[in-house]
Length: 331
Image (cartoon, rainbow, N blue to C red; front, side, top):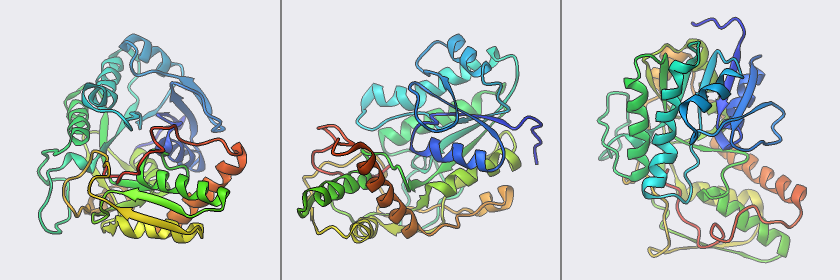
């Protein structure tokens, strides 16, 4: 167990979906939390303006101002990006963060959020573990793998990597599968119509995690983790994407028609039809395991969508591009 006398944490990307819940988990554990991002958000936490596209010296100055014991790298907005823009958003930002580290004047712990999409696709239903082959099959996975390798090679940075699965819960990204479905349902609810949702085929089964369990895992990594570790974070089981969509529709009570079409657009992500990780290492090293039922995460997601609708009136949560045909989230 690592002791941090000041218990100060800076969450990069702390205004995003995962980052907000990670910040909340640290605050609940008694830490002083600063969220660092390009734009402020009404999070209730201290805020630092930090743009990871800036030069390393600028990044270092922004980080120094927060006086962190621990830095969480949950940054990297990637929805709608491709090619070099996607790679820079996920890998380039991490490389610039690492280049800033020697300029900090202190050595805070870095916890980098990687992705299980860094692993090579598996055949059958074998659980992924930390020794599973890495050979990302998608641009998203390749960029995340590049970032993880950069962290592992940065000998001067006391860092550990958490390879995380898909997260679900309140405030899910509006461009994700469930975010788009929730928006379509809430729009139909407002208009008193039937939601018509066009999806790519929902045959995949994935390891989904309540995002609040992810927040707890990151706190556990700060307290119990050690530099050099790489740990999978997931539930250990797979759930059908169709089951999640059906559960969200049921939670909404909104009549809906789902059309699965092979010509519907799909987001970059996993190739394999089935994916789940072995959480044994996280349990052994961090004392962590997923404990929240995924159906509660879906229900809370819907309630948060309704709360947003009430708070902003009829203003759309997503732009015109995100309002087109809904695609399968294969992060």
